[in-house]
Length: 218
Ligand code: SAM
Image (cartoon, rainbow, N blue to C red; front, side, top):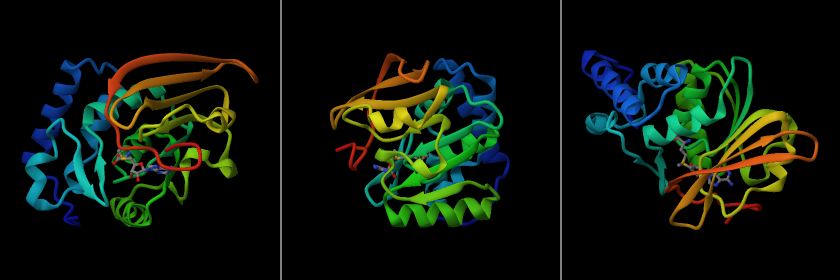
């Protein structure tokens, strides 16, 4: 990973182009588009691969994991309807790119990652970039009870089911966004907690995520 924080006209231009690609693909939330336009995604890449950073593709980040495709990040974030001050639990810190997008939307973010290398790298890296989040090393498939309840919960890995325990950690009126399916393909699902016992579930488009591994997962 490069720790060279250079954001010149070439990267800024490429980022602008990415925002317009996402708009063309149907992302309409201006706040989300603005956040994508602000976060220097190339910082998460080794300098050799900066030319890949603003393509609408997922990219390997080591330890068998990926930085999500910008469209997927924008799509999931749009579904969360983040408001300033929302407490958001992100499950699957990975590179920390999605965390930065949530922070740009002025959410208070608790992000959890099960792989120590990725967790440590994100803590160090986001700190250097000036982003402040609560980073937890652990199994996010059981959520993170210590900071519950959350306004929003975002799962960035593919789950076999919607873990009941995550629903219980949502505030009433809170939203969970989670890809659910088999190891190869998942449907994006949003769940709105309507009351203490009622939930509204919507099944949306098809995606391909790395698996959510843990107690309430694979
Ligand atoms: N949000 C990330 C980003 O912006 O780079 C992309 C996340 S990557 C697609 C999915 C991440 O979920 C991986 O880093 C993986 O290690 C992590 N993961 C898988 N199962 C997990 C679990 N039970 N708890 C926490 N993290 C998990």
